Length: 483
Image: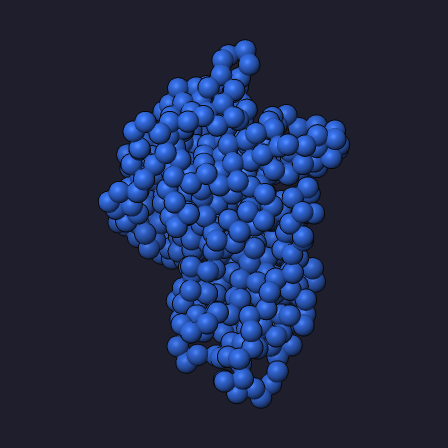
């Protein structure tokens, strides 16, 4: 709406995202959020007051030119919106779906001080989907330099690094250990939050425009070592993520029916369990599932479990299934995105707060037959700033479950570091790398994303990949004598 005053813009309510009905979507893996229409997108973009100092950009880990793309969007200039977006973000359709904008760009939006911020993430998705469907603004590649860079891991950090390096004319080879590129974007995030077609479209588009070579089924540490990559390539970037799961050290964790959220989500995603019964995927989901943990991965595991139960029930006329999220703190401390928790509750996931498992019950022949838990209360804050959960003596009780999924965080898989002498790591297994440049303790090797920070967000990994790419480009232009 051209010509609106600032007061008029601020009076426009935040536009709601169209969604599938909870009762319908809980029995399918189709995307929950349906996306803005053109009318909704323009009306939401009209809310932006084009601040003199755009704090929203300061809150974005990759520095998206938010005011510029919003201004073009509200003027109906989609090509301009796409161009502004692609200056710093070549994965807009992905980021618009999975980035926690509510604690990043939207949290720092001026409108958030007195009301609701501009729905930047939803508009980012709208622009990303528009470009993915029409390919109006292909990424441009500089003339070839003759330099070549190996990027290990095709998740968000690796993709961001590969794109930025390739845009400067360097040959990029992207190594992925699994049979499908995308890393955590394809094996860790459910179809109903991030469709595989969107990830595949973004990767194929970038690779086609920039000449990036993608090699799947390449396990670095086995097929090739990091040292061998150093000898063959002018620079190496490690964006291998953090895929090694954590478990509670309690009795019963080796019983059949106990698994990590990583294993569960990988099977659901890469073995196409979300297309049951078309695909008979070996994913065992019982009638009473407990997901231990309350982060985003826990929400994904719980919501996938619920869908698999209901798909099975629809085909077999069964009912009475339940999915519980078991969390040792209260609702206030839940680390998952508020939107994901809300969606899980809408769909029927049961939350057991202030509860901690102490033993998984069962035997080797029958598998899981229940879980013994204890009630918790919150004590003084711990090193994270959250109040420490303290067990209540004598409060133990049992939950009737037959499947237990642990979603308690991850660390880097040590396999990738085989044959990597001199690459320093922390006691948690993460790679030691400079925060601003990504340089590791080995000359010519950079690292970024979860392999350095531990499990974090998609966009923070992208930011690390872009910072490393900038340093790699500078290094290749004028290789310094010192590292």
